[in-house]
Amino acid sequence: MRFMMQRDRTIASTCGLSIGFKKGVLQLVPPAMYTEVLAAGGVPESEIPDDDMPSAAATPEVLADREAQMFRAFEEIVMKNDRESFTAGGMPHNAVVSRMVGWSVMAKERDAAWIKFTNGKDE
Image (cartoon, rainbow, N blue to C red; front, side, top):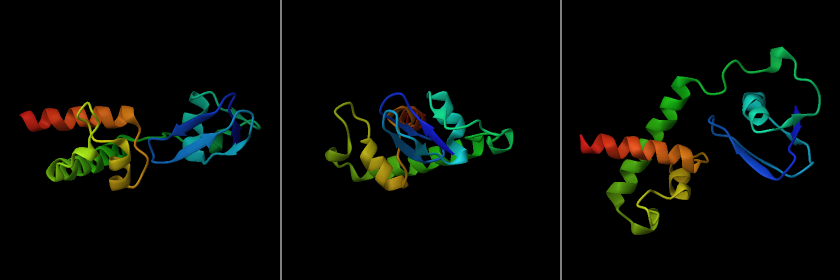
């Protein structure tokens, strides 16, 4: 199904997909992202049948797997200790983490995982 946004926007899903929207242009959206696009203000081109709505966009298992992948990437980044891999604030760059895990990592997700990662190292 196709959705439209009222402004330019990129929606990055917790399932690892990302879709760029242009204002007023319909964009094809996979069923796994319907809930997230609707929550971000997406308008479907037609009514969505209940059968097409996913039951859960991001299960706890998927989120735990994503976090584990980021932790492995963080470990490798820390071991290499390349200053170009870190922001001025001391966090790994999103681009570096995204390249290592193979999907687009949002800053908010990276920040939460980095805090857990660094807190776990202190214990």
